[in-house]
Image (cartoon, rainbow, N blue to C red; front, side, top):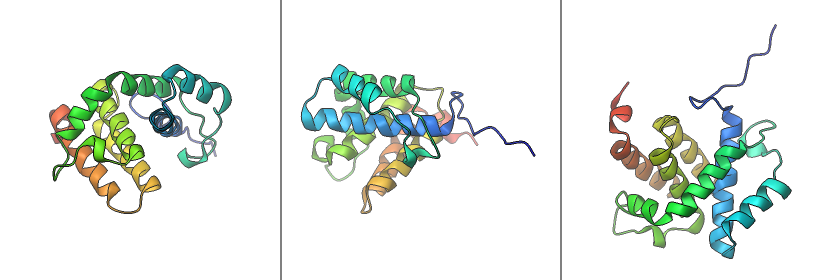
Length: 164
């Protein structure tokens, strides 16, 4: 019996590697916002000192470094634009500034992927970040993530979301 290859997303990366990159990116963005650390310092520290297997992302998942860097640099460079997109999808007068720091950065990373990385299917992006929200939060945050990302995906990639 032959072992089957690990599942891959449309971008060709192993799903464990992309999950690990997303998780590491959200953690790095959180760290940057909390500590006011510089982008290059955090990216270098993560890649040089903390780049290990991330068990939460699957068995022996080693993060995809290019994806990690692209998400962190993209979110860092476009946070204001991403916050505008997120704000348009929030209900009840909420703003990105009023959200928990981790939740805000999770939504920013997902919005960045939906907007800037069309090679990754929108439903995969929504599902991956929703799973991450479930891992970090137990109250209403996962429902908020699901609603915001579904609205964003329908605006940014409506045809793809409507396709069966």
